[in-house]
Length: 300
Image 1 (tube, rainbow, N blue to C red):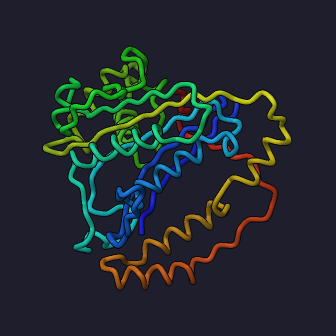
Image 2: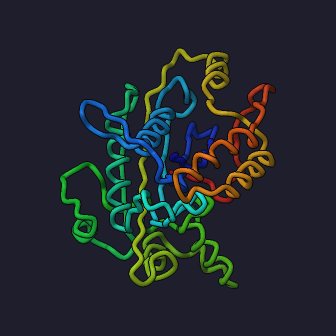
């Protein structure tokens, strides 16, 4: 089994979709598939399919801009309780995870079947490693690719104005920390460059810990003949998955986290329990427009 947790923020007026992939995890009991004599992991396939789903105009007709955000931090387990006890689970170390994300994201956009991508820009940044040469050396990646080392924010911009806040994100925690400990509202005077200098010396980046950030910004061409009725009909048909209320979603997650995935036998048992006890009835009501009240407006 493999799973991702992703948050989607639709900025209707800006024709922008911001995607934050906050967690990726496996039970250790997954099977790789073979394509043209090459093994491809289920996790890579899941991420690639998820991203490509959102790049297609028929599934996201309203969004001209799509921005993907990743915070990569190695942990023994994220979504599957006790899966770290499974000896078959391959847990990447800090640098291995950074290299993995860089490769997976690069391939996901390179192999996209969407033919309406006008511009794709990719950044990665490892706090504490100011130069690209040090970062490449760290993750043993010296390929001359189209990644930009840095971040998609102007160094002189005020951090409160340009950096979005997502759930379970190191940047958001630092922004909250600065605001909570600042009686004189000095945090709104900190610029982007100063923020990255501060973030590199504590929290997830203290001691020998290494974590990184990835951003991919996509600009798409849009068909001029998509009428409003067609757009809404496509949204209803292609929203995917099961739509539920937030309360039901949280309840389901809580039940899921009570299950265990420490070995193959228990994983199969937990999977069966999940399918039986966590049945969610799809919402047959008219698909409502998806909006979000994010604490900070993502404005990449």
